[in-house]
Length: 84
Image 1 (cartoon, rainbow, N blue to C red):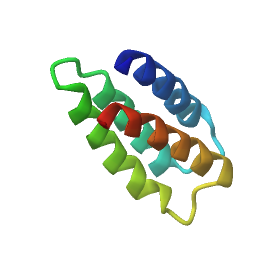
Image 2: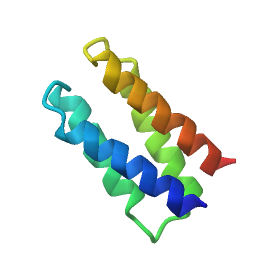
Image 3: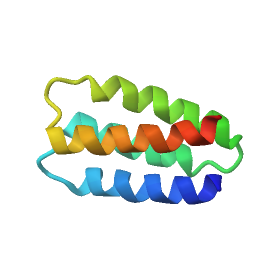
């Protein structure tokens, strides 16, 4: 279940990273989040919590386009299910 959620999240993060209309700092945070999710040595809940923290912070950035913010909210809700 967790790996399926991480796969879906990774696809969305990849989409954000490739979108040139998204500011560079947001794309960088997406890349960092993707790297964290790939670390199999850590517990899935720890990885999810760390990514939630990073993405929650950037979702409040006033420069983020609406479509990217919606994608980040989708990621956050997906990762919330992993944490529980």
